Image: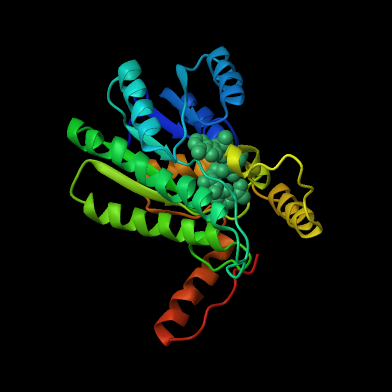
Length: 279
Ligand SMILES: NC(=O)c1ccc[n+]([C@@H]2O[C@H](COP(=O)([O-])OP(=O)(O)OC[C@H]3O[C@@H](n4cnc5c(N)ncnc54)[C@H](O)[C@@H]3O)[C@@H](O)[C@H]2O)c1
Protein backbone atom coordinates (compact mmCIF):
# COMPACT_ATOMS: atom_id res chain seq x y z
CA UNK A 1 0.00 0.00 0.00
CA UNK A 2 1.59 3.30 -1.10
CA UNK A 3 -1.10 5.94 -0.71
CA UNK A 4 -2.47 6.86 2.70
CA UNK A 5 -3.81 10.41 2.42
CA UNK A 6 -7.62 10.40 2.48
CA UNK A 7 -7.74 6.59 2.93
CA UNK A 8 -9.26 5.01 6.04
CA UNK A 9 -7.63 3.02 8.86
CA UNK A 10 -9.35 1.00 11.58
CA UNK A 11 -7.31 0.45 14.74
CA UNK A 12 -8.54 -1.97 17.40
CA UNK A 13 -7.19 -1.45 20.91
CA UNK A 14 -6.52 2.06 19.62
CA UNK A 15 -7.17 3.95 22.86
CA UNK A 16 -3.80 3.04 24.39
CA UNK A 17 -0.24 1.89 23.78
CA UNK A 18 0.82 0.58 20.37
CA UNK A 19 -2.65 1.13 18.88
CA UNK A 20 -2.85 4.80 19.89
CA UNK A 21 0.71 5.55 18.72
CA UNK A 22 -0.05 3.92 15.38
CA UNK A 23 -3.31 5.84 15.04
CA UNK A 24 -1.44 9.11 15.55
CA UNK A 25 1.21 8.09 13.00
CA UNK A 26 -1.39 7.11 10.41
CA UNK A 27 -3.27 10.34 11.10
CA UNK A 28 -0.09 12.24 10.23
CA UNK A 29 -0.17 10.42 6.86
CA UNK A 30 -3.59 11.97 6.30
CA UNK A 31 -5.68 8.88 7.02
CA UNK A 32 -9.21 8.90 8.41
CA UNK A 33 -9.13 7.04 11.73
CA UNK A 34 -11.63 4.64 13.26
CA UNK A 35 -10.51 3.89 16.82
CA UNK A 36 -12.16 0.80 18.33
CA UNK A 37 -11.66 -0.01 21.99
CA UNK A 38 -13.48 -1.55 24.94
CA UNK A 39 -12.50 1.23 27.38
CA UNK A 40 -15.23 3.78 26.75
CA UNK A 41 -13.93 6.70 28.83
CA UNK A 42 -10.32 6.46 27.68
CA UNK A 43 -11.51 6.05 24.10
CA UNK A 44 -13.60 9.23 24.29
CA UNK A 45 -10.65 11.19 25.75
CA UNK A 46 -8.12 9.95 23.19
CA UNK A 47 -10.42 10.46 20.20
CA UNK A 48 -11.17 14.01 21.39
CA UNK A 49 -7.38 14.55 21.56
CA UNK A 50 -6.88 13.24 18.03
CA UNK A 51 -9.68 15.48 16.75
CA UNK A 52 -8.20 18.47 18.57
CA UNK A 53 -4.91 17.73 16.78
CA UNK A 54 -6.77 18.07 13.49
CA UNK A 55 -7.19 14.38 12.61
CA UNK A 56 -10.42 13.00 11.13
CA UNK A 57 -11.18 10.41 13.82
CA UNK A 58 -14.15 8.60 15.29
CA UNK A 59 -14.26 6.27 18.28
CA UNK A 60 -16.42 3.15 18.39
CA UNK A 61 -16.77 1.26 21.66
CA UNK A 62 -16.11 -2.34 20.71
CA UNK A 63 -15.48 -5.67 22.38
CA UNK A 64 -13.44 -7.54 19.80
CA UNK A 65 -14.17 -10.83 21.59
CA UNK A 66 -17.82 -10.39 20.51
CA UNK A 67 -18.41 -10.88 16.77
CA UNK A 68 -21.66 -8.86 16.79
CA UNK A 69 -19.83 -5.93 18.39
CA UNK A 70 -17.08 -6.11 15.74
CA UNK A 71 -19.64 -6.29 12.91
CA UNK A 72 -21.44 -3.23 14.34
CA UNK A 73 -18.09 -1.38 14.52
CA UNK A 74 -17.35 -2.30 10.88
CA UNK A 75 -20.76 -0.97 9.82
CA UNK A 76 -20.14 2.30 11.74
CA UNK A 77 -16.69 2.68 10.16
CA UNK A 78 -18.01 2.18 6.62
CA UNK A 79 -21.01 4.45 7.26
CA UNK A 80 -18.65 7.23 8.34
CA UNK A 81 -15.80 6.94 5.84
CA UNK A 82 -16.72 4.37 3.13
CA UNK A 83 -14.08 1.83 1.98
CA UNK A 84 -11.55 0.63 4.55
CA UNK A 85 -7.91 0.47 3.43
CA UNK A 86 -5.88 -0.41 6.51
CA UNK A 87 -6.90 -2.54 9.48
CA UNK A 88 -4.62 -2.70 12.50
CA UNK A 89 -5.95 -5.79 14.29
CA UNK A 90 -4.23 -5.02 17.55
CA UNK A 91 -6.51 -5.26 20.63
CA UNK A 92 -5.04 -7.73 23.06
CA UNK A 93 -4.64 -8.60 26.72
CA UNK A 94 -1.72 -9.98 28.66
CA UNK A 95 -3.37 -12.68 30.70
CA UNK A 96 -2.26 -16.11 31.73
CA UNK A 97 -0.30 -18.37 34.00
CA UNK A 98 1.50 -21.71 33.94
CA UNK A 99 0.15 -24.56 31.79
CA UNK A 100 -0.20 -26.78 34.90
CA UNK A 101 -2.39 -24.26 36.80
CA UNK A 102 -5.43 -26.49 37.31
CA UNK A 103 -8.18 -23.91 37.76
CA UNK A 104 -7.78 -21.01 35.33
CA UNK A 105 -10.21 -21.78 32.53
CA UNK A 106 -11.82 -18.31 32.89
CA UNK A 107 -8.42 -16.83 32.09
CA UNK A 108 -8.13 -19.09 29.02
CA UNK A 109 -11.60 -18.09 27.81
CA UNK A 110 -10.97 -14.36 28.28
CA UNK A 111 -7.49 -14.32 26.73
CA UNK A 112 -8.40 -16.51 23.77
CA UNK A 113 -11.63 -14.49 23.36
CA UNK A 114 -9.71 -11.24 22.86
CA UNK A 115 -6.33 -12.33 21.49
CA UNK A 116 -7.46 -15.15 19.19
CA UNK A 117 -11.19 -14.83 18.43
CA UNK A 118 -10.90 -11.03 18.44
CA UNK A 119 -8.38 -11.25 15.61
CA UNK A 120 -10.56 -13.76 13.73
CA UNK A 121 -13.64 -11.53 14.10
CA UNK A 122 -11.86 -8.47 12.71
CA UNK A 123 -10.42 -10.40 9.73
CA UNK A 124 -13.87 -11.75 8.87
CA UNK A 125 -15.69 -8.43 9.41
CA UNK A 126 -13.29 -6.41 7.22
CA UNK A 127 -11.28 -8.71 4.93
CA UNK A 128 -13.93 -9.68 2.35
CA UNK A 129 -15.06 -6.04 1.90
CA UNK A 130 -11.46 -4.87 1.50
CA UNK A 131 -10.85 -7.39 -1.28
CA UNK A 132 -14.20 -6.53 -2.88
CA UNK A 133 -13.44 -2.79 -3.22
CA UNK A 134 -10.31 -3.70 -5.20
CA UNK A 135 -8.00 -0.87 -4.06
CA UNK A 136 -4.63 -1.56 -2.39
CA UNK A 137 -5.27 -2.38 1.26
CA UNK A 138 -3.57 -4.05 4.19
CA UNK A 139 -4.28 -5.93 7.44
CA UNK A 140 -1.68 -5.90 10.23
CA UNK A 141 -2.31 -8.44 13.01
CA UNK A 142 -0.57 -7.95 16.36
CA UNK A 143 1.04 -11.11 17.69
CA UNK A 144 4.20 -10.91 19.85
CA UNK A 145 7.70 -12.33 20.18
CA UNK A 146 5.74 -14.70 22.46
CA UNK A 147 4.11 -15.90 19.21
CA UNK A 148 7.46 -17.06 17.84
CA UNK A 149 9.30 -18.25 20.98
CA UNK A 150 8.03 -20.31 23.96
CA UNK A 151 7.35 -18.29 27.12
CA UNK A 152 6.98 -20.46 30.26
CA UNK A 153 4.52 -19.04 32.80
CA UNK A 154 2.39 -17.43 30.09
CA UNK A 155 0.68 -20.50 28.61
CA UNK A 156 -2.52 -19.00 27.25
CA UNK A 157 -0.88 -15.75 26.08
CA UNK A 158 1.75 -17.75 24.20
CA UNK A 159 -0.90 -20.04 22.70
CA UNK A 160 -2.97 -17.06 21.56
CA UNK A 161 -0.01 -15.30 19.94
CA UNK A 162 1.26 -18.45 18.15
CA UNK A 163 -2.29 -18.66 16.78
CA UNK A 164 -2.14 -15.05 15.52
CA UNK A 165 1.11 -15.83 13.68
CA UNK A 166 -0.45 -18.97 12.18
CA UNK A 167 -3.63 -17.15 11.10
CA UNK A 168 -1.61 -14.32 9.58
CA UNK A 169 0.61 -16.71 7.60
CA UNK A 170 -2.44 -18.55 6.32
CA UNK A 171 -4.27 -15.33 5.41
CA UNK A 172 -1.19 -13.94 3.62
CA UNK A 173 -0.94 -17.07 1.48
CA UNK A 174 -4.66 -17.09 0.71
CA UNK A 175 -4.63 -13.38 -0.21
CA UNK A 176 -1.36 -13.49 -2.17
CA UNK A 177 -2.98 -12.83 -5.57
CA UNK A 178 -5.31 -10.10 -4.31
CA UNK A 179 -5.18 -6.37 -3.50
CA UNK A 180 -4.91 -7.24 0.23
CA UNK A 181 -1.48 -7.23 1.88
CA UNK A 182 -0.97 -8.89 5.27
CA UNK A 183 1.62 -8.39 8.01
CA UNK A 184 2.10 -9.79 11.49
CA UNK A 185 3.64 -7.64 14.23
CA UNK A 186 5.87 -9.58 16.69
CA UNK A 187 7.35 -7.12 19.18
CA UNK A 188 9.34 -7.82 22.32
CA UNK A 189 8.54 -5.46 25.18
CA UNK A 190 6.92 -2.09 24.44
CA UNK A 191 6.13 0.69 26.97
CA UNK A 192 2.32 0.40 27.20
CA UNK A 193 -0.47 -0.52 29.61
CA UNK A 194 -0.24 -4.26 28.84
CA UNK A 195 0.95 -5.23 32.37
CA UNK A 196 -2.36 -3.86 33.68
CA UNK A 197 -4.59 -5.64 31.17
CA UNK A 198 -6.76 -6.91 34.03
CA UNK A 199 -8.35 -3.42 34.07
CA UNK A 200 -10.50 -4.90 31.28
CA UNK A 201 -11.38 -8.23 32.94
CA UNK A 202 -14.99 -9.26 32.36
CA UNK A 203 -17.19 -8.56 35.37
CA UNK A 204 -17.66 -12.21 36.33
CA UNK A 205 -13.88 -12.53 36.76
CA UNK A 206 -13.49 -9.53 39.05
CA UNK A 207 -13.56 -10.45 42.72
CA UNK A 208 -13.56 -7.10 44.53
CA UNK A 209 -12.86 -8.76 47.90
CA UNK A 210 -9.89 -10.87 46.82
CA UNK A 211 -6.42 -9.61 47.75
CA UNK A 212 -3.81 -10.47 45.11
CA UNK A 213 -1.51 -13.30 46.19
CA UNK A 214 2.19 -12.62 46.76
CA UNK A 215 2.94 -14.53 43.55
CA UNK A 216 0.48 -12.35 41.57
CA UNK A 217 2.02 -9.16 42.99
CA UNK A 218 5.52 -10.36 42.04
CA UNK A 219 4.34 -11.31 38.53
CA UNK A 220 2.75 -7.89 37.95
CA UNK A 221 5.84 -6.06 39.26
CA UNK A 222 8.08 -8.16 36.98
CA UNK A 223 5.84 -7.48 33.94
CA UNK A 224 5.71 -3.73 34.67
CA UNK A 225 9.48 -3.73 34.92
CA UNK A 226 9.97 -5.48 31.57
CA UNK A 227 7.35 -3.32 29.86
CA UNK A 228 8.73 -0.04 31.23
CA UNK A 229 12.16 -0.94 29.82
CA UNK A 230 10.67 -1.66 26.39
CA UNK A 231 10.58 0.30 23.15
CA UNK A 232 8.46 3.45 22.98
CA UNK A 233 5.24 2.67 21.08
CA UNK A 234 5.98 5.51 18.64
CA UNK A 235 8.99 3.53 17.39
CA UNK A 236 6.83 0.45 16.84
CA UNK A 237 4.34 2.63 14.93
CA UNK A 238 7.16 3.69 12.55
CA UNK A 239 8.05 0.02 11.89
CA UNK A 240 4.39 -0.75 11.18
CA UNK A 241 4.04 2.09 8.67
CA UNK A 242 7.28 1.06 6.91
CA UNK A 243 6.09 -2.55 6.70
CA UNK A 244 2.76 -1.57 5.20
CA UNK A 245 4.49 0.64 2.64
CA UNK A 246 6.95 -2.11 1.65
CA UNK A 247 4.49 -5.00 2.10
CA UNK A 248 6.76 -6.70 4.64
CA UNK A 249 5.12 -9.71 6.26
CA UNK A 250 6.98 -10.30 9.56
CA UNK A 251 7.44 -7.07 11.53
CA UNK A 252 10.11 -7.55 14.21
CA UNK A 253 10.72 -4.21 15.95
CA UNK A 254 13.24 -6.01 18.24
CA UNK A 255 15.73 -7.56 15.79
CA UNK A 256 17.94 -8.76 18.66
CA UNK A 257 15.58 -11.74 19.05
CA UNK A 258 15.81 -12.89 15.42
CA UNK A 259 18.71 -15.32 16.11
CA UNK A 260 16.54 -17.08 18.73
CA UNK A 261 13.75 -17.44 16.17
CA UNK A 262 16.23 -18.93 13.70
CA UNK A 263 17.55 -21.26 16.42
CA UNK A 264 14.01 -22.44 17.15
CA UNK A 265 13.56 -23.33 13.47
CA UNK A 266 16.83 -25.27 13.49
CA UNK A 267 15.86 -27.14 16.67
CA UNK A 268 12.49 -28.11 15.19
CA UNK A 269 14.19 -29.41 12.05
CA UNK A 270 16.68 -31.38 14.19
CA UNK A 271 13.96 -32.78 16.47
CA UNK A 272 15.44 -31.05 19.53
CA UNK A 273 13.37 -29.77 22.48
CA UNK A 274 12.22 -26.15 22.95
CA UNK A 275 14.34 -23.37 24.41
CA UNK A 276 12.63 -20.62 26.40
CA UNK A 277 12.55 -17.07 24.96
CA UNK A 278 15.70 -15.46 26.44
CA UNK A 279 14.42 -11.96 27.20
N1 LIG B 1 3.45 -3.99 25.27
C1 LIG B 1 4.16 -5.08 24.96
O1 LIG B 1 5.25 -5.31 25.54
C2 LIG B 1 3.66 -6.02 23.90
C3 LIG B 1 4.55 -6.98 23.38
C4 LIG B 1 4.10 -7.85 22.39
C5 LIG B 1 2.79 -7.77 21.93
N2 LIG B 1 1.94 -6.82 22.46
C6 LIG B 1 0.58 -6.77 21.94
O2 LIG B 1 0.31 -5.45 21.51
C7 LIG B 1 -1.12 -5.26 21.46
C8 LIG B 1 -1.47 -3.90 22.03
O3 LIG B 1 -1.21 -3.90 23.42
P1 LIG B 1 -0.42 -2.73 24.17
O4 LIG B 1 0.88 -3.27 24.56
O5 LIG B 1 -0.50 -1.49 23.39
O6 LIG B 1 -1.27 -2.64 25.53
P2 LIG B 1 -2.36 -1.59 26.05
O7 LIG B 1 -3.00 -2.25 27.22
O8 LIG B 1 -1.72 -0.27 26.24
O9 LIG B 1 -3.39 -1.50 24.83
C9 LIG B 1 -4.32 -2.53 24.54
C10 LIG B 1 -5.65 -1.90 24.19
O10 LIG B 1 -6.58 -2.96 23.86
C11 LIG B 1 -7.83 -2.62 24.46
N3 LIG B 1 -8.64 -3.84 24.64
C12 LIG B 1 -8.48 -4.82 25.56
N4 LIG B 1 -9.45 -5.74 25.43
C13 LIG B 1 -10.23 -5.34 24.39
C14 LIG B 1 -11.39 -5.88 23.77
N5 LIG B 1 -11.96 -7.02 24.21
N6 LIG B 1 -11.93 -5.21 22.72
C15 LIG B 1 -11.38 -4.04 22.29
N7 LIG B 1 -10.30 -3.48 22.84
C16 LIG B 1 -9.71 -4.12 23.88
C17 LIG B 1 -7.45 -1.96 25.77
O11 LIG B 1 -8.52 -1.19 26.31
C18 LIG B 1 -6.26 -1.11 25.35
O12 LIG B 1 -6.66 0.17 24.91
C19 LIG B 1 -1.71 -6.46 22.20
O13 LIG B 1 -2.22 -7.38 21.25
C20 LIG B 1 -0.53 -7.06 22.93
O14 LIG B 1 -0.69 -8.44 23.18
C21 LIG B 1 2.35 -5.95 23.43
